[in-house]
Length: 377
Image 1: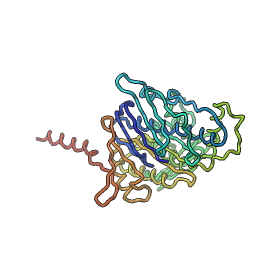
Image 2: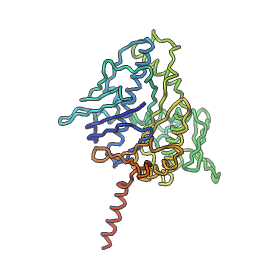
Image 3: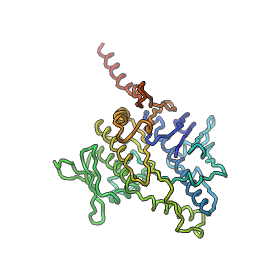
């Protein structure tokens, strides 16, 4: 499955185009530059394409029903305002899969051609996961120790996935921290502990650890869950039954309909993986994430999209692709969002090797040095 996307006038985004979304895409930019808006828009379009795939698979199997999708019902939290029609500019999105299936948003409306059906050979089943930057608050709600406020759609999505992941995974190496995660059930309550590999102190419950651990451990747990434990069989069954119920077509449902041969892709959209982590730990975390992605179960492909403020992560991507063990330059896209537009940071050396051009990311340090020198004149 190949994807391209063009976005105009959505929130802080003026005009962005990505001709080929890579299996691992990393976005960097200032706060409020539009990184999360870009990720949420891509996730939205992927979710719409997922629903179209389910509709097409059923139609190809002889079950025909109209596909009625409302953009207003699909938008969540702050995204509702970003797609409202403006006086001087129109919010537009064009998303294309395999160079032949196109979904558009124009003037606040979702536009899907009436003849849009995915051919059997192009069918794919997608799982879209959002990992919020608020995830460090999850440990407080693991066993409902604190009542959950109205935190919005994206936090709830991450929390629900975390509960499923913690029920499916017993333990997990956290190599970037030189620790392990241990999940135990006590009086029907799940307790999550982090234990040092060298055994210098006893395991500590997740909510009692540092903010960096509380942010990064759930992220790794979710990645491992979607790479190895997430059941596409159950997800396909839930999606099909839900869709048929909404379309009042359950009476035509045949349990022996076979969708298991559809290619399966997990898309993880991660906000700020580096939160509260020391620079060296940030680098090791990204390396472990790429390892999980490259060793996903045989029945699925896993792809990552990351929004970050960390120049350490961007620089360390060069180390990862040079090693060539978990990620290659062909599978990596790195972009800087600046003034509402996109700057491609991937380039090839004279020897034909991919590198991430991090030159512009040194500007803050250079400016600090210049200011310091000015004060000493």
